[in-house]
Image (spheres, rainbow, N blue to C red):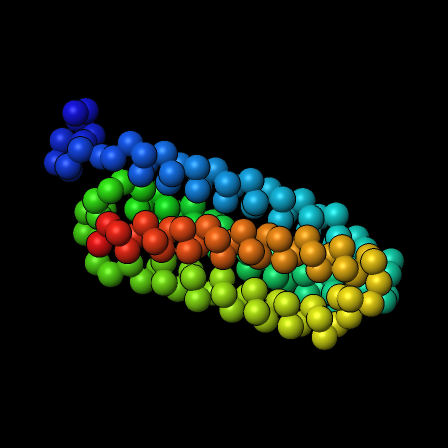
Length: 151
């Protein structure tokens, strides 16, 4: 046992590895979401027919990035197979999952109403945004399952 593990039960290395992998995957999706937003932002001025879909996508991607950062932050706190010191109810994880579900539903509905299926370009914007949103949901649920096992 190392000095950092002195007051805690022996950490489960597989749990730590899964937590690290979850954080790394979330980090990759943060980079993807930001890159997609940077690529699409200039298109707002150039294509009037895609303005609504791109605007909705940028808002959804901003929420996705916030959720992914929360996955990394909360996942780091709940990485081991025992609760972190001073941990009460894991409300942050519950809020994260509610936001992830709502942004997926609201994003799908908004982009559909704004014409996501009217052209190939709009469909491309829609699909890329939904892939990131589904990744947020999967990572959030994975974190919630871990936290529910720990507590």
